[in-house]
Image (cartoon, rainbow, N blue to C red; front, side):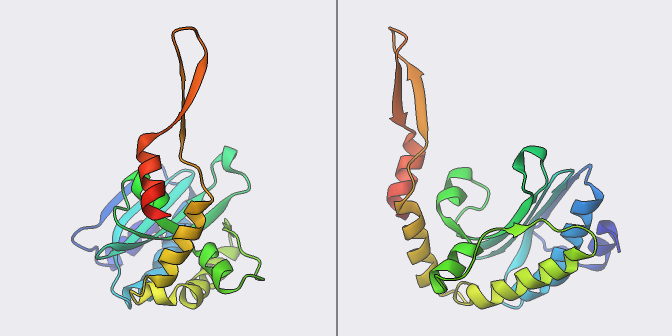
Length: 198
């Protein structure tokens, strides 16, 4: 089944946007499999498809429920090696960079919070026969480690987000003064977000 077949079969939500830009076969298969396996899981908790974007080297699929969202993001861009995908859990505006960058956590961070001895990191981007197995495993981990988030209990999410952001620095701006010396300052928006979400 190809991507277009999936969208013909599955009814798009009224608010969903779909964008494709020369999608590669591996990203079409990845997106199809995410929609086949993870979509029904999160929909049981009231999340609906908000955005699906598939390109040659990137896939982004976002599900929303009120202020919460789940973003599945995969990359095979040559400079992003080793290629991976992440399940990101967030609150607020999933389209605004500063908002989602500071107001979200990767599923693997929740896994580490729940089980500090677990080996946790982003998922390796799968190819061929490994795609279904990998996405099914990610779906199981989503149910296991993000159960509270899926049900709308945000306590663990807030705690994990705070821990993550306390150890981050705001983005920096480097500008030259009148003598050609560089001055480094905090980027104001990211400083505001760091204070807000730490």
